[in-house]
Length: 193
Image (cartoon, rainbow, N blue to C red; front, top):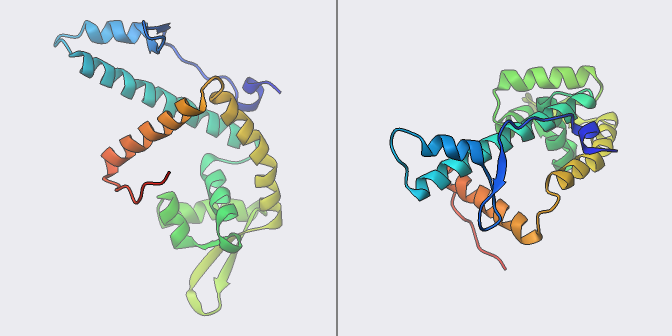
């Protein structure tokens, strides 16, 4: 199966070129920022280029994720609910905790669970010890849906990363988490080998 069949077509309107070191850049974008009213330093140019490349990558990744979920009859939000429940102990989480993990409102999680429950992929379970607490639990059908999607999801991730060495993947991961650290103030818990 071809990559475009899995994910659909995504568009990039830039013009890729390589610099002297063999690194890719968008030549039209570089030309436009170099012609800005205020001249930018080389560091500023590289920062703006990198952040723009990251935004384009994030947009294209989200489009791919949306199309992939849609091909399986899910929205991206519903897919994330199923993935969280599949990874949770006993494949269930309290609705409030699920909303917190997905960074959505309780009202939003209620709507997502309503749809997934109607489709037979999730069920609500009341906590017998605390009547105020309701869990979302992955059903057998929901588990099968996620299991059927995992191999294809891995396939499109591998195709996106095709041609990158393990070292480049580690550098990419590191750079992304450094940006997350800068944006959120998240602290490094521990360093390992």
